[in-house]
Image (cartoon, rainbow, N blue to C red; front, side, top):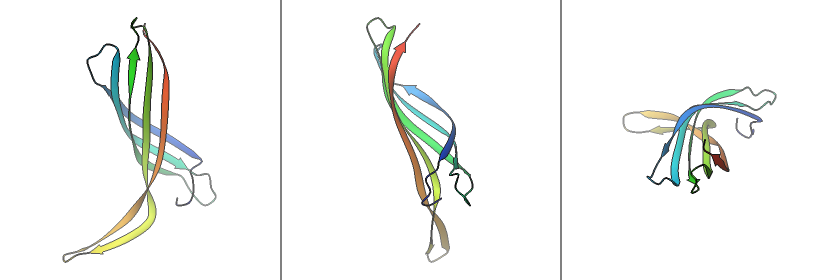
Length: 118
């Protein structure tokens, strides 16, 4: 896939969120997930590829005095390792090892919004 930017990516992940702190108003959190990313460049002679992927993120939720309305913001990074097409061989006293390099498909997002508690 070297030199080809995917035109379509389908992420399927499962994960969780962990909140920290004891404040009723401000709740920082971290997120993480694991899953797969289906890369489909839609280019002639290049097929789709299904790869392991993961994500990490964090943010905070702040509730105003009424505890019914607040704001929330978070940032997230999705990472998918793909083979780079570079190969290497390392030889030591007991054995030789061949390895393939890795390139990284990264995506990120920042979101923010209002929180309404019922």
